[in-house]
Length: 502
Image 1 (cartoon, rainbow, N blue to C red):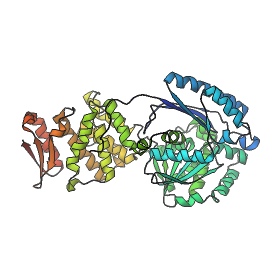
Image 2 (tube, one colour):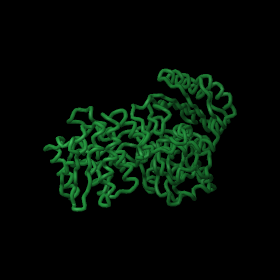
Image 3 (cartoon, one colour):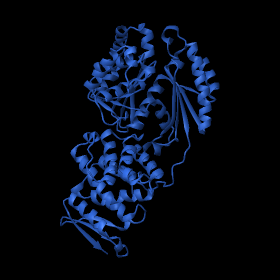
Image 4 (cartoon, rainbow, N blue to C red):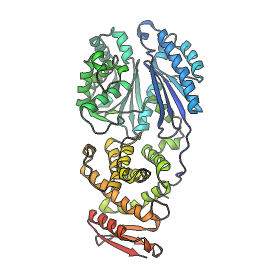
């Protein structure tokens, strides 16, 4: 029984679900394409209402913010209905749970939205944020931190499990209120809380997973400063010193200065220095190895928690790639056969691979044909863009580039002179070229249709040969192009090509 037994090959159904997140700073609607292992956002809108502004001083939600929030929720209700969402999940966080008029607001909000709203406790908010990180980065090992407008949730995660967690009143809006908009005073408040937080000792030598819009903006600024070639925030990683330096820089900038920065959301210019300061002090009080950006957070964690146990355990990357194959490949069944066909080469000791390398190879097989509808001259570039920029999770940046370049080379067959290649080491580059050469041979033998590859052998012999075996009924498949591609593949592998009929 192969790893993909039971995979359904018909195109994935479109059953949109909506998540409404009522935070201390923003009210957001995200509609996903379904309640699946790797949901893709199909609509995303936020309104910065500032519900939590002033709560630390007055104890109440701001009345003007309430009016804006209710108007946004009425709009979201209409949009969700228009998109066809059968399920609308809604959560409210720090501001709604802590304000004295929070309960009254939630009653009005439920009527405006036409759906129930779960007011999360601090522990629940931390749990869902951590589940979001696990859903998007299954191998996560460290502490997840979700910075909202009113609070900071920290929780230890390892081996897909949640450990100790804590909620701290260190959101930018809360800090601005408690400090009277005085950065030095706010820094003192943050230091006071962080020195009393034992969870930071768990960060020694491990990763800090940053969740929240403020920290995504900081990562985006660092990405631009470093001229990073892949503009994908998920799993963008900064070393400890890099994250500390950019955070310290941003915390010293004024709101007016940040409004002129291209990579910063204008609506966050006022709160971003405080969010940056929290990250800088967190790194100061811990020995985190690096900072990893996660675009998955409370919303995705909330959906992930509702999946059946079997789906939760499924591979996030392979699930996404399989959805791509079902939508875009000429034959999804063929891509599964391609996975098995390439096993013949990589099961040998000469080309042994790690579990992660095998996983990426299978993902590349599933993506190998997604560019076929494009004009032949643009298939390579189209595939490169689709894969490198896809809303995949469960893969780091080198892995993402490996997948994109493997399919690019399948069409282009030449070395790509691009900044993306700097993200791969020599072994990964060699594997991308080798796997693409196998693809090039496979597709001229099978014409991308199922049922052919399982009848064709491709193996290494003990005499340093690469042997292509065809049954007599398929002998006519041999031709100049097959011979040429077999010879090219054999040369790349340091082997002599041989064709065996029968």
